Structures are given as structure tokens and as C-alpha cells.
Image 1 (cartoon, rainbow over the protein chains, first blue to last red):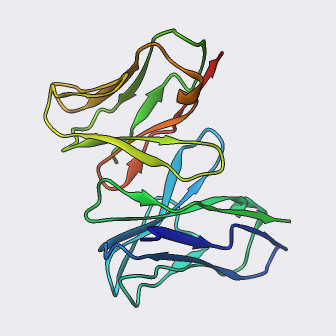
Image 2: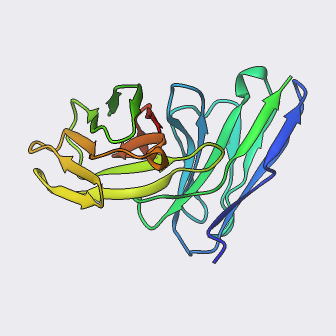
Length: 111
Length: 106
């Protein structure tokens, strides 16, 4: 099992550009979530999904979109990148909302 | 809104010392999780505590869930440089504390 995979590992964007961060899991988990991690602020929830076709907002959803068309994939879209979105992004999956398995992260810089 | 507050935020100790990290909230949680994160990697689950007053041990790490299920602690005995990392508590609806950055110097 590959677990949770994320691509790309690093990305540099210019302000206003859009991009999609990919996340996939092969554990057949219903729950998937996206977090951003900034220094001193732990992990903040952006969006989450409790199953295919179902998504909901977390603590910091503005500027991000998600969709969940399959159990395996949960992409995160940045619509118009801003410097404030410079961060490390983690995707996670779990059987329930507890005991999450995390991917290796995507380090995003917006200039 | 459920919040989790961790203390201390930073901890730098010498190898062999003991330490305790705290995770506190004013809300009741049905369970709390502890994760450890190394630089450049995603967090890895260490333990889940479910029952008020529960104590779980993982080698030199001891985790406790408060009787009222509002707080938890992580105690490390005889810390080693390999324990260095960011320790995060989590609970509720995918909520994380801000983390405790531990550095253990040889």
C-alpha cells in the first residue's frame, strides 16, 4: 500500500495563478481532509470530505475549492493564488474523523 | 467552537531528562489523538485515548486523558535525540493544537 500520496512535493506560483494539489489514498478510507501548516499554528483544516460526493468547509476554506468524485482522490484547487497561501499543505485520510494518515505534504510558495 | 491549546510551545532539553507536554481545552472530547511530526514529513499517529482517566504507554512515552475528557498529557521519560520533533494533539472535528516543538540535545 502506498498510503496517502501527494503531488507535487514543491510548487512556486505567481500571484493570481491557479493550480491543483493532488491527493490520493489506497486504503479505502471514507474520510479525507486538507490542512495547511504555518509556523506556530499547528494544522488548520481547509476542507474535508466524509465520502465520495460529500465535502464541507473547515476553519480556513476561503480561496480553496475541493471535490470528491471517487473514494480515492481528493484534489485541492487554488483558484487565484495569493502570497497568504504560502504554506505547507497536508492531505489526510481516515476511517472516521479520528486516527488520520497523512501524506508527505506539498510546500507551496506564492510570489 | 472547540479549541485545543498545547503547552509549552517550545521545549529544549538535554538527553536523559524527563518532560511533559500538555493539551488543554474547555470542551469535552470523545477522544484525543497524539501525533509526532518530523521535519519535512507528515504527522504520524502515536496514540488515541478514549476513556476519561485512561493511561497508555508507548515505550518511554506515557499518555493520559483527563478524567473530564477535556485535557491530555504526554510524558517522555529519559528523552533521546530521536524524540526530537513536533508533537501535536488532535480531537473532535479534525481539530489540532498548535503543537509543541521538542528538541533533545545529546
